[in-house]
Length: 130
Image (cartoon, helix red, strand yellow):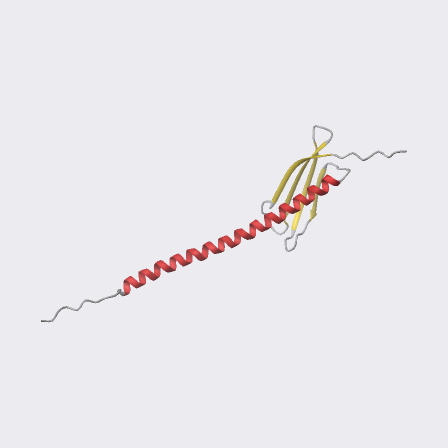
């Protein structure tokens, strides 16, 4: 008597379903890689902008005369085209100034990459001795 021959292995449908699952997983991994790369670039730009804001604050602290007002200037850093905005306001106490620094990308109207708000003591000029 002939015995029925049992097929071993996978059917075509099973193989196609497995390939579809692998393709979806690889597409998700590629998307995740792209998002992580983009976010890494944004974080790098923000870190550079924060360094520029801290540099501006250090310059202000070294100045002997601070005048209230708003100023804007270019403050490019490497490949980044940045605009630095500086606002100085006199505080209620005569010896201090409120300082607000914002660093923005010059090309677009996005929110600032860095913002730094602080209070700076006004340095008095040394008196000349006779």
